Image 1 (spheres, helix red, strand yellow):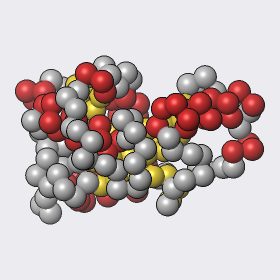
Image 2 (tube, rainbow, N blue to C red):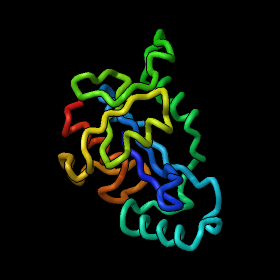
Image 3 (cartoon, rainbow, N blue to C red):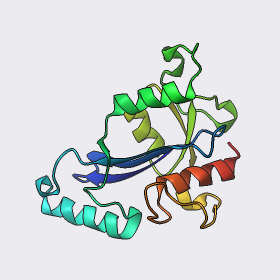
Length: 172
């Protein structure tokens, strides 16, 4: 799983802008989302507007108004569990636990890269487990230029590209 965000108010609030979940058993069929904002850009402070503009221009290339739907953590979590889970699985089997090692990974574990990503996602999606595999996406093996985003090409920070890099690096 990989995300791209807009951190606001000096990191007190994080807007998830892009999310990709890649099932290692179906790598050609990722769950991929770009979320539209919950509120207009003009509601941001001047500092936050500059920060969003910097992140858009220098990091992930996704602008504030792009997106198909508003982020709903409960809806996305349910979608992930329904898509990746077995019909006879109990919803509670995916309860929150402490970060596990790669050796302890189960089908409910999601590998992520990036400082604080696992902790942030655990708070957003409490029924899923996250394994923090790398402190920086640049520590992951490259997948080449042929892997591009379903939405549009927007650089190395694309959540979909990071998912494929996780898959390649850790042979998940």
